[in-house]
Amino acid sequence: MPIVLYRIDERLLHGQVVVGWGRRLGIRFYVVIDDQIAESTWEQELYGSAVPEGAEAFFLAFAEALDRLAELDARPDLGMALTAGTSTMRRLGEAGLLAEKEVNVGGLHAAPGRERVLDYVFLSRDETEDLRVLAELAGSLSARDLPGSKGVSGRTLLRTRERAGR
Image 1 (tube, rainbow, N blue to C red):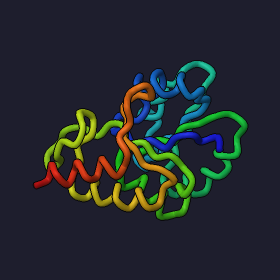
Image 2 (cartoon, helix red, strand yellow):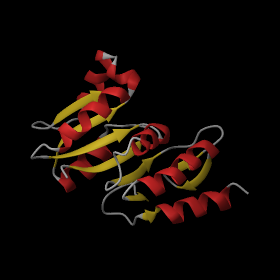
Image 3 (cartoon, rainbow, N blue to C red):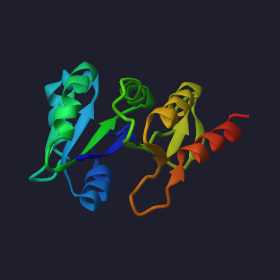
């Protein structure tokens, strides 16, 4: 299972991901699944600048990801797949691609319509529903900002969101 982590993080490729997670897990390739970035050379260059020397980044539109994730998952080196939001990750789950995968909620920040659940996770009602579905479709769902910090199970995350939304 070379794609060892599927992460939801609005900032996609940044220091916390490539240094905190990438070094700890031995990540050699990153797969960013985002329709807009897949069409934008300059955004790919911007995000790609965060990738450490010797590692690769792939920028895939959702439809292309459906076709290529099995191929990338069969690589001999370790990888991480990233989406900027819950809806794209949910769609991967609905396509049957996350059944035995670990999904990590890592960085969804304050914005209109979102409620604070954790210091680094703020969720809207729609995002909460996406995570409810993902909890059923993924091998595991948890929230954790860095690999050394204490994780929060998907069940606890959703329960905390319910209390915050009252």
